[in-house]
Image (cartoon, rainbow, N blue to C red; front, side):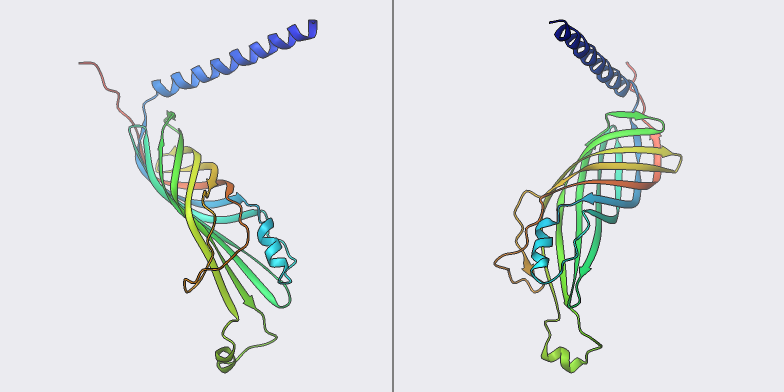
Length: 242
């Protein structure tokens, strides 16, 4: 069929163009010396979280307000660059609050990880490196019973369960891509990836007592971070033949 032949030619052109682009990037990465040095960075982070299970659990207590799917937070990181190897650590945290006339719930998400990666593309003012983060993260939910006015210490003693906190933490795996633009002592960095918690959460009270059941939590969260970078950068040295 004529249309089939034309489509086949277009597919071959796209495949050839893709192969040429990959070859060009690979050749550039090999030809360019690595960027060495070390830097620290900080900035805002946003993750896309499925809070539907937690929303359903809070609704049983009368909280009809929904949690926002975009979870904003703030974090920092530090990295060392050694002959294309990227090694460091990072952490971040954020919270949201929803409530009703009688209850208020604050949901906190936080995590920290060890990061290891490799520079696949490096120029004087550009560094691209895929990184794998291995660490821990979790949720903490504080549920507060609202009163009509200020309470006395005696009332608190009689009814201490006005605020309860449940939480869990577990292993996290975060494949991600770092795009860093070093400019002298400062720079900017864009990080994007996916944070995955492979294990099912085991909720516990603040004192350590386990809950028989808890709200369903999404195991995965795509995220992006925009950081301001401070550090020292220098081009790597080529090894000449003896």
